[in-house]
Image 1 (cartoon, rainbow, N blue to C red):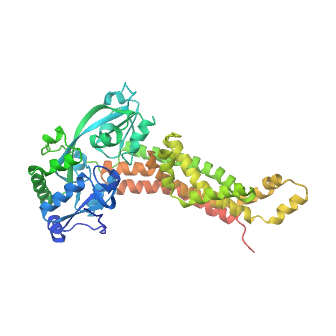
Image 2: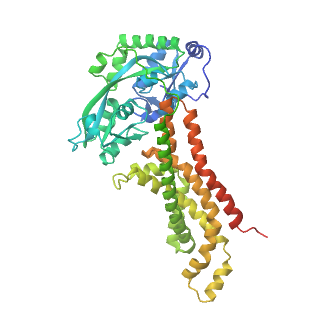
Image 3: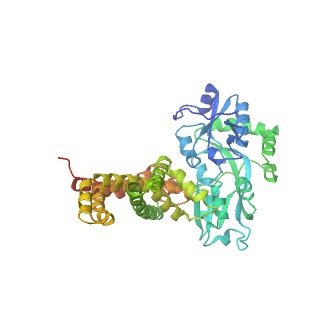
Length: 477
């Protein structure tokens, strides 16, 4: 049994192997979101974690004379978290690649896999990488499959956060193919009757990773892994999880990796991608705000002037969308409703953010409507104007004038919340930052550039909001 480690982050100091033995715990980092069969919650007991890597971690720790403890971490930031000392070792389907070998020290491999290209059964024209030109292909960001696709000319790479979502999109024909490790493909893709394997386009290895200075820990883990292999324990674990195949028979120490020249600065091409992602952020934010303003105005009018069922429905909408996370709403809109309405990612992003912010806009407009003196409406009605004309010529112009500064502030917030749409495959500014950070192996430069671009976009809006607030909102006397 294994529990999630909850120690605070700290930097390693001295010899990590000695520290592991002194505390009696080997802390290994992974991401439960990766799911079965790596590491996931036991369906029978949600307090336990199970998976073939959980069992392997227990076995390795036992041979080291310590206890294994899992530390939850986002898969995409496992290496930065290892570098800052959040845990001692990474073991979570981390593929051995030259780029990663430049930052970490790999142990001997513990699993060999293939890279499977999965397509719909009716896609007879796709039989390999060369057939992907001009097509949209899904994969996990910063994975070996991602590297393969980036080196394939003419492919539009669509990046996902989880392993289930790309195959859902493939079934819905939002993308044309998925390239992922065979473990993932066989469990999440090929179980669907509408999908098939087009080709195995490469092979890879999983290994544990430690910090470059932890040579003694690496050697100790290699010794433990060799024991686990020699006693047949690794084979038993893999067979228990239906992972043993011919690839594992010839599993051996990988040949030395040829590291590419390390890039520490962003290229001009990456700067162009940053600007393109900035444009995507601006367009999504602007269109979402139009949806939010329109929806918010209708909701506020419904709550103020509608009959009882209309008021109740509008109030329910506001409470539901204000009371649930926008991230959850995006997931439901894009993936949950896919069998009914298969929206493309861009449209889902605009509608999702717009519907969420409409609830907040409704409250701003309601406050603006309440700020208009009732006597003005009564006087206009007494002069013979219809209620609709009073609303259009007297109430709404004043209410919107009062609400305008709040609307501008919401637009600034929406601009920043647009970073959440990366979960439905939209490569906006923040997502581009994470991709570039992995490429240049540093989060500082891309992070500062990302922050600067957000500041360039939001600062003028904040100045406008303050000016509008001073000029348009009446000061009580």
